Length: 563
Ligand code: ACM
Image (cartoon, rainbow, N blue to C red; front, side):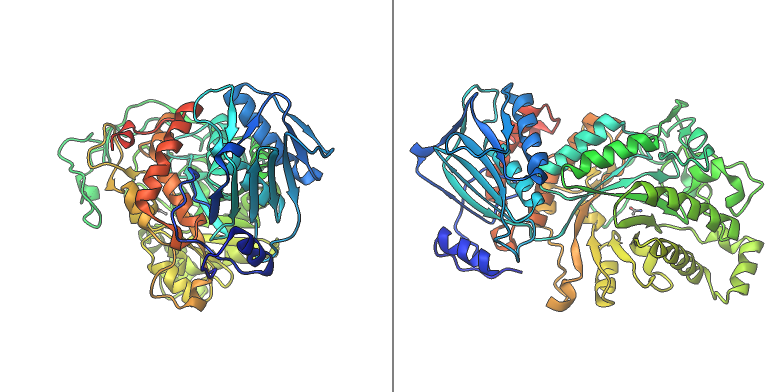
């Protein structure tokens, strides 16, 4: 973490070059989210105006992504077309340059705007991209022909290397056009990882050439439960604040479904296109293939990989994990071969170093009651089903590692012993993350009480959500570094991630409604130096951001405009 005691901007720049930084704790009302580390306005008379002749200069080809993104944003929102050039010009230019000045500050950038132009200097192409996102947030929030940028100097860098957001496309399918929009939203907030939850009980969403039934059968379900789980609508179910979860046992469940076919999937060509789109925004896509549980869609297509191979499995129509419905993969050689084939296609397609293999909520009942599984456990000296879960994950890890890649798993992968090189995504609170960090494993924090953006944001919502409450302020006040970790252990906290499970999110507008503005709060947790976090200040800056969302046509709750 960086040390601080602010003197002047120039000093700060020198410190940055020397590998130290000084963060001022005085308030800066630059309406940028996430709040930059250092920002100082210049002379108000020296604002820069973008006009029809303004040029975007790129010092080298690696910066063209940033230039194009800025150009497209200005074109789309203000109907002004700027030219991009690799020839320098003294006046009326937005200069994008990358000089490796701030070597100790990964993806840092400086931005200076005066009346003659703007210069962004990043220590990487990603740093320059983050600078262009700050320019975007300095532009007018209404359609305007006068595009003024105030005179300003910014020095900025991320606090965490992993700044993630997840999207569940299994419970409800979102098309490529929306996934790209979602990626743009992440880019605007300087996020750098998109966790694409591609498979689950309710739908398999990625074309796998070797197993076509995964999408022919597994991508479609015959209905979805009506209302809140277990399908009785909202009647009689009260929203309760965690940790007092609504208690409904599987035996109470009366499943009512709408009988409407739902589904969809991405072809490998579409996925390639989305990966390239994200890469131009410096966002890595981490694909998730769930195992050993959350596998009903796969089992509906290939029942031979379940613990009851003669059963007619169905793509699940009801949410939640209920033993009655949610079967798991059987730990047979045939299943491992299938999973390795699937992962091979996934790893061939996704350049990400990291592959998420799920690992959560595997009901042990299926393995317990399967004779073949019990025999397999005996043969492999596995004393119980937790040991089998660990064996399962470690075996998959070995395979993924053999291709030079690293697995990420939900914190249940700690049960029965952690796979040697695995990264843990801590969702059942921070306990799993803390335990993994203490074992020197990288950790991504995503505790459900703090970062599940599918939970209700108000006590009373006007549409259905998960029956748990997560306010904007709660998100804002979350810090990914648990107090019980020593500084050395804290280094294993790679960052944090917001999750958007889509049981009650059936369309893009609802997805936007759920992430905005809690994504803003999340981005500030992940990017801004901790000593600069200040909720009242954030709320002020948010007002401008919400106006920008109006300009961009983004859906969010108007209740945030009320105070
Ligand atoms: C999870 O929410 N089951 C990771």
